[in-house]
Image (cartoon, rainbow, N blue to C red; front, side):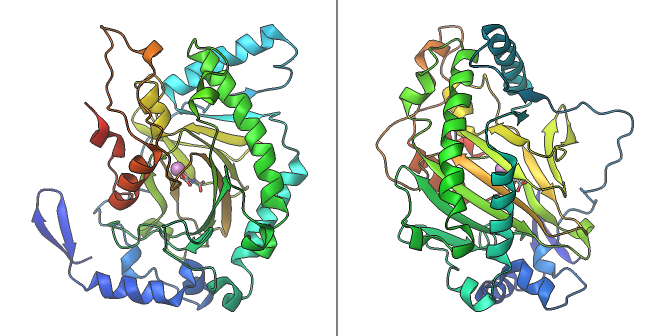
Length: 371
Ligand code: OGA
Ligand code: NI
């Protein structure tokens, strides 16, 4: 693969990576554009630098299964609610992840959301290109691009994405691409309701008042990030999304039937299997920070796949790039003399800026904020 070793852990490709990245960026058609052009080999900007194939799994035997939590009846039946809170507490302490069913968002809405994402990425190229941007100043409401960290990450990912901030300040209809214009606002409203319910349960699981996290502002912002993972001719050479943690409070993910999402648990990668109608909930770095490491923001990744496209929609509970002055720090009730605050306070924007500039390089942005 032609890597020059320049010191411990640092390798430098023998080619002019920057020029190839610029050329790729300028097509404005992302990874899908490459696949549509008929390539049969993965270009080298996408190659993983590691000598071993990190996609191959050598472990045998049965693996742990990610918990699934059923929200049916939790508002009517206090016994059920307490059982759910106990299960959720275990899931967030150990996995940082779980799947949720009977969450209240009807299946036909989930189907329409997936159709809208396919519709966006598979629309006429000239129309789609108009949305292509890397401007994170907040001027453009919708950002479509391939690899938000194209120029900072060590490996380009087999994935195109588009992003829109839906709350606290929802977009005007014309600001949303046509295939998502009706369904994204509908989905966001329902996602906000589900988010409120999940943050109530999380607050209770922390032994706090049900409104605690809501009152802190954890449900103020919602950003939707849609991903399109095209079919990959040589999936073992590259990655859809490399291992990372999320930079929000929680993420609620809708994935389609293809699969490939994995979470790192007890030193191994565990599949997050697609379950029709289910959503995946995971702890983000900011929830780990305010819970002083009680709940863990786990590493996860998406494998590249011959089967594709795969689509997913991540709902990030965060105010993202919107400037707010609110400082988040470990919750007073969760720290004590024996368990002092492990993090300094930060704003959502400061955290996000640091995370974005660093890119998905396999290290946690949280370390930068540790005391
Ligand atoms: C993310 C993410 C997983 C997926 O957007 O942070 O982890 O399945 N997405 O696309
Ligand atoms: Ni993620």
